[in-house]
Image (cartoon, rainbow, N blue to C red; front, side, top):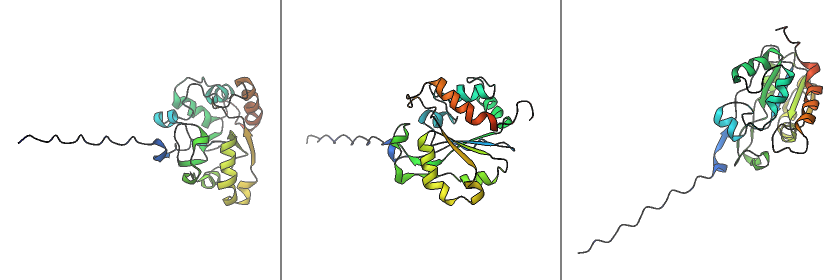
Length: 194
């Protein structure tokens, strides 16, 4: 009796990256943080490498590196140490979300879980400035975080800075650098005092 060929197994369905719940990076925080820089959610490359602003076209490290006298391509640990020494804390508003790709516009709003920014702010009594790296970080904070903060945390000066993402092509790197330096420079721990 001739054998009936078995049907080929059905191919595995392609995994939709938008169904994966992404988890952000831990905060970078020193003992005397004066400035808290908040992004929205790390991009794919940053999550893959577990490094903030890892995409080579993101202008964060060239801009902030010039402010803290740290080469943008130096060892990552040295860059983080330099941030801490100058009083800069670094984190993101969003702690978990679903997003296909790296663009903020692809974040699924119903999937957003925010980081405990209130708890972090409470650990930083010297904090004088919260700087948002782009509009989405500020919008998510205003909508999901600010209403839960105490009066002291809500009184901290807040400023939205131009996004350092390569997707923000409206301003050149030099224009972004001027805005970042003007906002962060006066609030930093003086070089060499740490």
